[in-house]
Image (cartoon, rainbow, N blue to C red; front, side):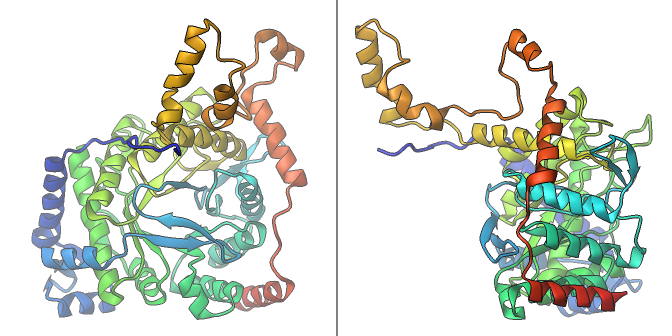
Length: 478
């Protein structure tokens, strides 16, 4: 009999009744308060669908339209890597991890100095992510300061594609550069039809809280719907500033804003792939910093994850972030807590692995450390297999009646590797051996691994003909 998991570990903060109340409040926000829609095509789509439009751009959306959009949005989004291999299924309780985007500062892995991020930091992050087995997708991890702002998003996208085979989650300034990212994907796939059938990248998009959906955000949303590019539409309202300070109010507003995007998206192209979500920012009233890892933020985040299960729509999530300034005790605790919540909550596309300092600074050492953290938490999430082999009744009888031990028993040998998780960076040696090996900290060990990846790992290159086409496209965009 094969090992089977009869119960999947889960984390929840909302009862069924709570979910209904959150849903009802979000519907009231959409239908009675309304959303500001600053895009003519989106306004026309909503008007034709029966929405009430007041004062030119205030739109009130009936619940029926939300229900229709939820019904038409796919519950699963298959995602493929650069080589066209199927590597992720977004939806259900399947959880994937990747880096984040657009960080202003980077910690130099050689000097440990914090500096303005450059395009080389995008390249290094893609290179390292390509080698780490628990990173499933990549983002730029930096907003390069050394190239013109107009080119930064597209150059970052191309740099990621050249240095990593894993799927990309991208940010874009507007429709123009996301169109060029689409063209790069068509080059890699060989045709537009193959690019549609095997999505390579996911576009991150967001409105402006409270309740405002600007032109550029909706332009990207509509373009993604038209091309069937998976699109994240995730508001990031900071509680106490751009959303109510209470956790339930924070959640209800963000949910309504994300669902507004879903309605517009599905009116444009029924069945196009969409991910709902929110940025769980909490404004620290004592410092003015916008926190990623406040307990209130974790709770509202998992509340949103639960609502994605309520609607059965793939979601945008978080993993392994910290508000700490370096890979220290705080960073380990906060990143571990966030990752544990995401895995046990069943979040899907969890980004920002390696974020430090309230989402201002990237640190590749932290990424390497979090890769091991994710691996251990994934092991825990596999749960406890219950069957004849794992209950081991016959083994207990055999060993117990012989007054022996289990060390040399065939059952131990047979089940050792599939039962025990083995660390690569965490220490399980005694003090004497630790001293003998140079008293290296876990950060020291992570640095050794990082240096080895940067020196010896060779990401698979893009075919020369396709690379020439991509480089020509980049030159023409300038």
